[in-house]
Length: 580
Ligand code: SF4
Image (tube, rainbow, N blue to C red; front, side, top):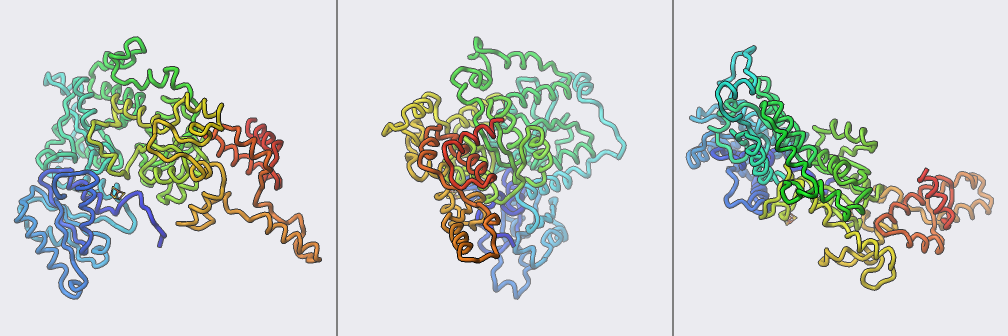
């Protein structure tokens, strides 16, 4: 058992629903109890789809458990086929149905339906949504394409030779975009445009908008592009092994990654991609003609104040790796921590964290993430919808970079993350929650001002509440954080905020005076510190966005040395210590 209030991913059958919903002509029969239809809302409300997902639920109830639930599966499969006449069917079970072991996939396979039936084995108690999507996509593609697989050992002509011989443009398959994916719809549009400009046609895009016939055409494409490894990596590896199709694996999020993506396309297809790259390298003088403004915007003088901003990044592995690189190498932020809930992709995240000298947090426990954010006291959090809540509680600016998402991250306007336009969207989105440079400067100089004073929220985010007591205090003083954390967790999760008040320490000392010799004074561990008023007022002179970090460093410095009362000197000693 694991106490969970928020979960980063749904159960694996939601991943299977994402595949079915992304496609056309695929129907999913889900053996599930009454009530599991809640998942429809993810698609009709959060993603605002104009029709129900193509899912038939068996919706068994308590009274059905005394009867033949297997018969219920067969009836549901038959009726779903007759009503929807799909080109292929997925049949699987939800968490509760897994316990009653009706084997719905095998039952459906035995019904001799005139269309391919893909049985899904998705262990709901050990795997999650993205894994479910990946497995479903893989088994669907494999079922549909296995009959066309060439004999083992057959070779495939290199793409460069095929396109030259046939005198045509190269054809790429885009793999991995799904319903409920973060900005997948616009990423597909953006990458299709980029490929078009390079002279590459999109042959099949799957599962997004693909039909069963499209899946069968995948091997006629020249190569595959894995847009989202969490969903498409397994399938691409199978296509690579079985059909010997080359795979482009660079995920084009960020200007640098997009340039590498373009170069990789050039290497696979033999196309000359340099003219496009040269055009994109355009400097300030050609800024209007350049496609991505991020490189110039981040070099322009207004962005100087962004340099060194401390950022924490969390989300799925693909978006975290991309975001950390953009933050560090394209915007000049200091990445102070990264992490992912994608356990299957923990290794590349760990490797990248080691490369940039930070620790990777691999966890799907949002309390662990909250604790890490509180510890690191970053100036910006890049995360999921969960981190937006965490950042709100801690009073830290935040931007969303990954699923799980809220309705506002399925915007009406074109908002890709990938390609050169995606980099523009990213620049605007990440910088927006930060205090603008001039205001930051003025607040530091005139911190007593009634409107723009210390702790005010950014004026351009005028709808947000002022950072009075609550918000500033969270970064600034430990008590509110303790209060908020204990409301949904245990006090032990709050790290340095687990405070034994000084009175408790003095009570032990008093016992000593009374002759209780079992505890020596030296053994009393200092677990708390107290700020003297002069030190508190010195602390207030420090700009608010780094004050939390200074407070924590000073307290740690004091605790490590058994200093109970923090003075101005302690602060400066700590500053000198950490500045070494
Ligand atoms: S948080 Fe909002 S958008 Fe998300 S499920 Fe709840 S009501 Fe819907």
